[in-house]
Image 1 (tube, rainbow, N blue to C red):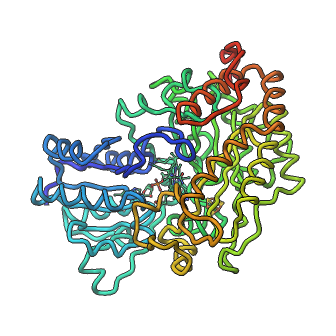
Image 2 (image 1 turned 90 degrees about the vertical axis):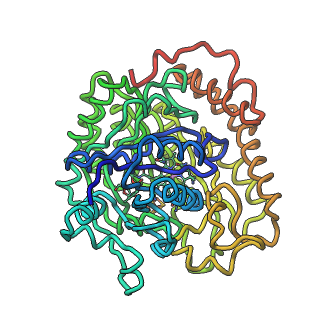
Image 3 (image 1 turned 60 degrees about the vertical axis):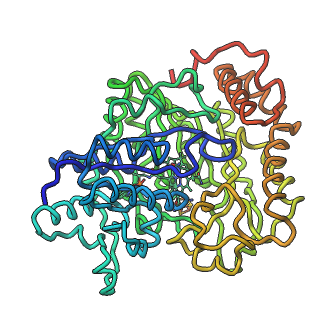
Length: 492
Ligand code: B12
Ligand code: SF4
């Protein structure tokens, strides 16, 4: 077939606006930008349009763009919308080919049975989609096709296999960022520079994959349990180019775990220290191993914030009958050190387990308030492709089933808890955040932190205003009486 136009999209379901508990930012769709960059280098006419707010906008785009191929990056909570868009595409363009890839298809390739889905691709998408396009154009088969499935091969019992890039290949990738895509990006969480001073927030990846195998996490299905790295030099040059081209002054590393290799992290810091101007960045960390050496080097390299996952010890052996979150003295020491160095520390927790009680949850948030500047509270969600998914069936709340895809967004309770109803859970989560910000320990610690790090005053102020605009009552000192010192941001 002749392919004149390829469109890549990421349906957002009901997650189009930034929220209070999760996704308090607007970011570029990095996965499909990577695919577009790879395909364009091979000469394919691939384009990314993002964000697309609703079905009507999607239809209008199809009418002008008339793509021959559409690739959908499908998150579980947006599966239904993706299926709807694929139907709309078939109505608008009779011969269009719909390809589904990303997290949900990787966890459940059986969605290829929907008549509007022509192909499903599992895992890392670059090689696989390029192989499929080549196959559609010439009939030639190549290695990447092992990750591709259509209804015929599914019915014949074929199981698609993830097809990963080698490190040398990762090195040559560069995401295709359409010109306007970074205009809308913003990080409304506690950040330095604060939202009003951020320019063209971009996502960058140093590594792909994660070596830990947490039962609730989709990374094992997606990346197969090993980590592949780019060179620090190419990461530095990507950031340098982002700054030159768009004025980017803040980066979010979308790596699954920034500190899974101390050696590689330190090598990256060595390179990032050479950047002029220095660029602020933050990323996701595991709590272990954040010693003085690591923390001082990442700070020197522009790291302004650590997002620390506190639920990684989650095991399934006893049907979610787990211990609550515990922070060892070593971890607490690391957090204290990060505060001393003037970095923002965000805790990421998951709630919604059958054994939790109201007292445990409220006590937890008060306890965490003495250690963290910000708290992200997600509900544990059994995504297809995870170990948790397979044992979740018997634990689901009345009225929720494992095919209620729209509800799989980590923003609502999924599992039965005999002591807490679903509505009560949502109230408790709000109360947890309230207690977090209003605890005396939080207020005292944050006041001291701002006094010794005046560059953070504006960050706290804008963060406080964001919380208020989302209906959260917060202590007045978070937003009042601060002079704007953000021009002295530590990344400068
Ligand atoms: C960074 C990140 C974010 C960022 C940015 C997300 C974004 N849209 O770009 C932020 C903080 C905003 C975010 C928010 C949310 N996230 Co998030 N996030 C991640 C994280 C840590 C990394 C994703 C990433 O950028 N990877 C790097 C890029 C290059 O890879 P990629 O997107 O996977 O793309 C590759 C492949 O997937 C594939 N591919 C992707 N699309 C397509 C399309 C086609 C056609 C093909 C062929 C291939 C293909 O090829 C790509 C290149 O190799 C993952 C964690 C994880 N375990 O993976 C969670 C993860 C993706 N998030 C998740 C969720 C649920 C959310 C939220 C709903 C709530 C929450 N819990 O935070 C919101 C809503 C997101 C939204 N509306 O976009 C889930 C998704 C699970 C699922 N099955 O749907 C994950 C997997 C975490 C988890 N809980 O297990 N997230
Ligand atoms: S939750 Fe984090 S540490 Fe655990 S497997 Fe997923 S990405 Fe890795």
